[in-house]
Length: 605
Image 1 (cartoon, rainbow, N blue to C red):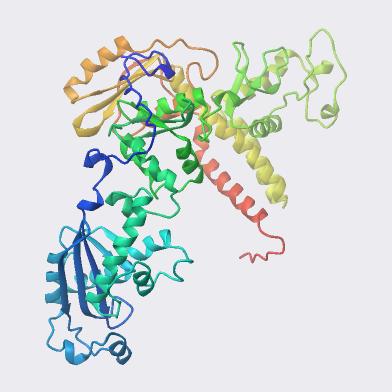
Image 2: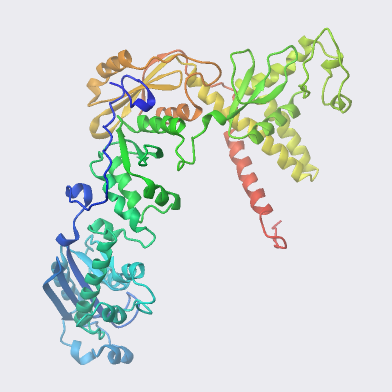
């Protein structure tokens, strides 16, 4: 089996689903219900209205009115007065016309509610200002010890705010909308009459929504005016997509990759781009440009995540914000020369130098380099030095911040001790740099030089954080091969073959007894990975970290290991608690610095 052409040949990974051919125009078509949802013409709506003794669910219900409709036809009505168990306020009697005498012989809510719930069973509840009516019904269920059924609820007020303009009607009150849509029923604060008027409003709104591409119940429930019509019309792009874990690519008419994403269920995830659940403005713009969605089914989520990273790095889609330019990462290098120095570089070479990284920015690398200069007496000049020829020392020697090997004050062997300290801090033992700089931070804080202490803290954090990450990654990238499995869905096992920190094969065994046989087949067909240079010999840091997160989940089993997978005992990772505190302190300092000038802050002693 092979990967998609975009990733090259990688045996052991499932073959991607063939690209979905482009559709020339957005013609609404009815696929399977599982794909497109339930057509509105097949949905049974129960439009309900209540009259109450007050405005909160703690008050009583005095009348329930409901109309059942389907496909534009009224197929049933429900109406009953309800004895609230307490006097109806006078102003409510005037507004609704429902008096105490009218409800004295009416059933209590404990009897009326089950009848309504039976009438509404299996339908979608519709109400004008639905939170009000549904809130009363839920409170009545709780008070009478009945379970509230899992109704879907549609609010005509919310729908109207999305499709009705102020030029058409000054507000979204029921009476105003009933006039706008030509309802023969005038709302009069009686439950059944108001429910009948709401039916006409609902049908008028559905007619407008249909012109906007809303044709299914799922689209109606997720409707938002923020979703553009052209975004809704692109929902056909989700047709035929697999309900399986994998990667999906949005492409325009020219085949340019606009966006790459991953999901445990490709079809369900892609469908959300055409509903109100997608709130990102740039995604709406991307959907407007897209002409096709290409799915790539994967064995499990780990493979999907890795494929996503590789596709983003290859195509650099304009609508992806992360992982697009791994080649732009920078490194802190301990040079390979007689008197080594630190340098910020963009490329790891096959030399004897030491490397720390990758850093997301040159500024972060510079901060880490400054931390190393503060902890170790390593030279900061850039000129090449020779034991045969001396050059005048710079100001740092006069400030006693350098031992001036340039003037011959320190031999190569003596200077090597400083370079060794830096290399150990980078690769295996961070105790010296952490202890020295923390002592300096504490001294500055004790002297009241809090800003200087904060700068030293941030520099040490930049060094330690990156060292901890690199040392964790190198534990895996040193291994020629690692095979692991973890429990998956439906009793199966997810399997991964990792070589030098790169995913070489992924698969699934249907049950535990089949794992070893599947592993042997995957190892035999997995991609050959030739290690390169540096801490990341075969994959990006993000890919290796993604694999590590999968390996470190509870339940993962190590099946085969070629090499040694370990982390240094005194590595930077042991200071994770200090790093968390340093990050919290940095955020607090940043928030304080961002306060508007003149803001008063009272500090507690």
